[in-house]
Length: 196
Image (cartoon, rainbow, N blue to C red; front, top):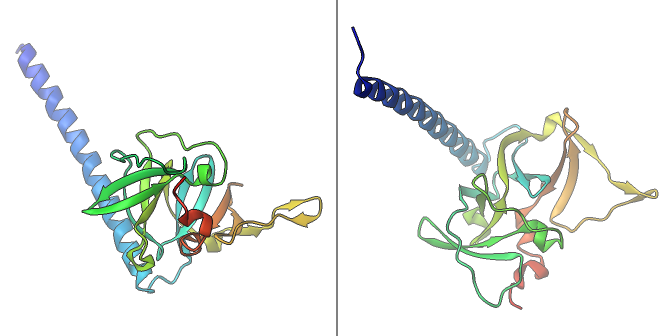
């Protein structure tokens, strides 16, 4: 039996729809599991010391699940005039205007490159601060208990970090992670001054 061109196209379309449907289902399942674990952590019922791992610029950070809120795509951010270059602008997250900040730029480093893998990690509602960080990539949950705390040294002196960068860890693969306290970041006077 000969198959017509339209039959072949229809078969291929069904395969593509099936594959993309499976990927969407897996993504939804992953997001649902992540939201569930974050809600359990925010209620204080999560016994492991798990944190959300994110890549901001070229640096890995750990964010306490109780301090992080919703994670959304970084597609629609509206610039705000007369603000510092690290203040990217405002994003509408579920009807709430949320300030979006580029943390590396805030630290005086190179700006985070905006691409399709970028996300905004909103601050938890409990912090009462409508803000979020632009992250290059969400790396998932990380168990700090499986990491080793390290102390950065220069010429036999420990490097001083701002109060919102609490500890530094190294995982089994040798990757360095910085523990980022959003609760401390929102109390930093420089962070609060967005105007020029």
